[in-house]
Length: 240
Image 1: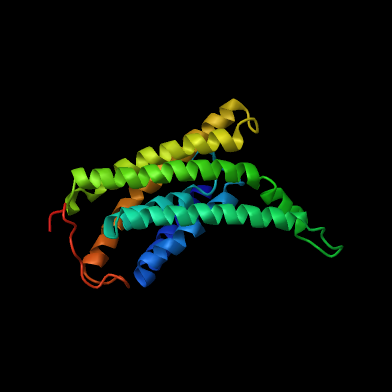
Image 2 (image 1 turned 90 degrees about the vertical axis):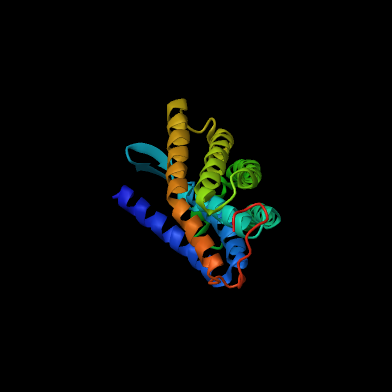
């Protein structure tokens, strides 16, 4: 059943991010980036078995953050994509500080949440450190790489090339950094390797499936169906 739930989670995430983009354009993507970072860092504390591999949750929603920054790079420019990365970074820092402060309060005798919150968020400093480093390095690389390939492979027909090339490498960087910092010493080495492998493979699958949504986003932009894009203007280095 986990595999079915994973597919449903994939559909749900893509529906939410595209809905946010269709309704609010750039702002919708700015909203989605902190959602993806915060939710992913909560979900990653849960281990599951997917397709016969030990894996953590959060891979799908985290990977959609790359889709958001790629859409921003494609339709609005590199500066807006970097701004989204900054928003995601700040949101993760804010969540970590606020939740650690919340755990300092002594619960009342009627409290039912402290133990559960402590179980999840007591891991947060290490996971947050891993996420901060991995998120910043991998996303900055993704924005740079997408722009690099956009300039060398411009045009509508090569959108899939720049989307996949930038994302595949960025997610490999993210996986190696995150797993090494977050889980080193917590799991036996074979489990650690399996988690890293499954994490990257699942992110890779998500990246493959997000390509049609890149084309859908551009189609909406060209047709003026996005809230803040009324007239589509091709970039100077693109085919009209």
